Length: 147
Image 1 (spheres, rainbow, N blue to C red):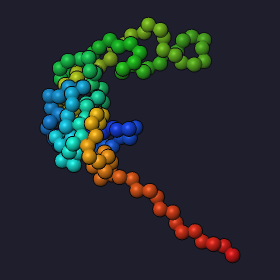
Image 2 (image 1 turned 180 degrees about the vertical axis):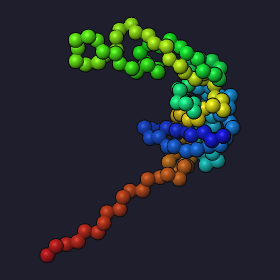
Image 3 (image 1 turned 30 degrees about the horizontal axis):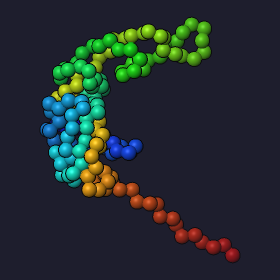
Image 4 (image 1 turned 45 degrees about the vertical axis):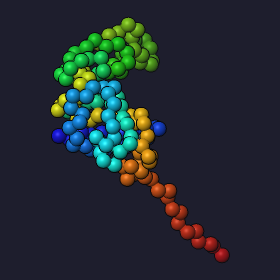
């Protein structure tokens, strides 16, 4: 199975695909060494910060297990829906509202498609260099003089 990995470091996110089975059984918050993900990432260390499954449901760190569950949420994780108060022009979240939302549990399984990782320990090179995605500065075209 192929996992879509979002590796973030210093405000930049790099997307790679990995067929590594190392993620099965890991939980949100667990640390993974870079060489387990990809050989080029040797020396780096990553922390799992989140995931989402094949239907787009987010993994929630407070729900144990591998399945799905409907949990009661307040404003914050998984609840961004705005409700309109009567006679106001701007939509706001009504104070005290709680809604039941479906979320995926915190343990990685075969149903997970996308995993978010944060670099906690740098390797010998930068993340972009290790992945071969180093951005080169744009070369300027030679200017022609007008006479």
